Amino acid sequence: MPNYPLTRFHEQASLTDEEAEILRGLGEPEMLVRRQNMIRRDREPVDAIYLLLEGWATASIRLPGGRRQIVKVHITGDMMGTPSMVLDSAADALTAVTECRAAKVPLARLREVLIAYPRLGPLLLMSVQVERLALMDVVAAMGKSSARERMVRLLLDLHDRLAKIGAVEDGRFDMPLTQEVLGDVLGLTAVHVNRTLRLLEREGLIARHGQRVALGDLDLLRKLSPLPPRQVRFDPVWLPAPGEM
Amino acid sequence: MPNYPLTRFHEQASLTDEEAEILRGLGEPEMLVRRQNMIRRDREPVDAIYLLLEGWATASIRLPGGRRQIVKVHITGDMMGTPSMVLDSAADALTAVTECRAAKVPLARLREVLIAYPRLGPLLLMSVQVERLALMDVVAAMGKSSARERMVRLLLDLHDRLAKIGAVEDGRFDMPLTQEVLGDVLGLTAVHVNRTLRLLEREGLIARHGQRVALGDLDLLRKLSPLPPRQVRFDPVWLPAPGEM
DNA sequence: CGCCCTCTTGATCTCCTTCAATGACAGTGG
DNA sequence: CCACTGTCATTGAAGGAGATCAAGAGGGCG
Image (cartoon, rainbow over all chains, first blue to last red):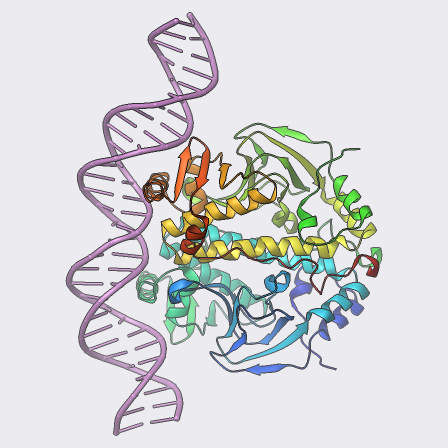
């Protein structure tokens, strides 16, 4: 019986001990995936969702002409691959950016759990809406912001998410993403990612040594970001309380 | 007791008569909203989601400098405003593009229904994932496609969605969106939207008279689109069957 | 040690923006 | 009935953000 770290649910709602326990034991035995390898290929039949127990991974969509767009950068503790659970063949590929530990959750298992713990449906709904909001913000940033604004926003987003899992010290964190990958996230070329980063560096807004990034004046950076972080409501009114279902 | 047309759920899963009945009676008495008026303002406290009973509306995010990005074009039958149900203040504004009939569903009412009909949780989850996929595709298109490709994709997307509600005849449909609005959807200026549309016209791919759009060679257009429509799985394995919960 | 990947920078190009002007059309009030 | 006004579509000209092409430098790893 595997014993995983919790998923992100406890950030968004109170869980009973029993619910927390179920989430801990959700996945199959963990798998180890090496850098650059795929956790799940796109256009593959969908039979599971995934928990990223440790590491960085990307969810990317393949377009004609060898183009690819990364639609999500996943970090430790994320659920992955859930958008494709409504499809027969996966929309996005899940690729390990660093070495990853991950666990499969077969869709059949998910059904059992949804039946046994009906509150997980609304809980899952909640976390999916949070992801959807993140995508809306990405769309807004891509449609209406400059490369510099988008980069600032991405850095702040990673900063805030990493801070929640204790991977930030005083504005500094590891970002194991090549400029090529950053380009595929932001809809820019690697070359322009470089120029944008160097610009931010010259402006004294960020500093870098290898994969280590240091955000300078956080308040100033947040002013430069085209969008503020979303304040997710803990235990929203529509979410049935533990006793209620 | 209001009697609305069904939401989109029946496109994605089998519903019991009872479930269908509940969905029909979900909303408060309908409201009428005139062109350009807001159904729900952004940054407003969130206390409900909305059913678009008839008309066209947009969900848009406001950015600094008067910029705005439309993240979804809603048509008759859509649920609206659900991403913000995890927030205290709304992320997106809902604006009537045409005169709209809409119905509010208070979040408290939603909780009751989720408790009384636990299968609605997973059903709602399903439709939210479909929306999330749509956003992923938008991101992919914005990040990696030309104006022309994006426009073709949007037209096909609208075509396919309108076809499902019987609003397309032989490739022709009404599209009551100004070029300004199209620009805010595609992340382009109204001027470039115009040039792109005129280009497609000159190429014989589309025709227009006023708000009426006619798509020419659909197969050819689909080849030009950077992304195919997603094939949503009806009654996916993880979705508990009506008897099961 | 040598290879390949990644970062960096310069030069040039191009797609889309910006600015500006005109025309078509609908609604409105006299 | 018609002038008046505002919105929307259209087109041209010029500018700019980011792409593309190319080359060199550094560094990790087999």
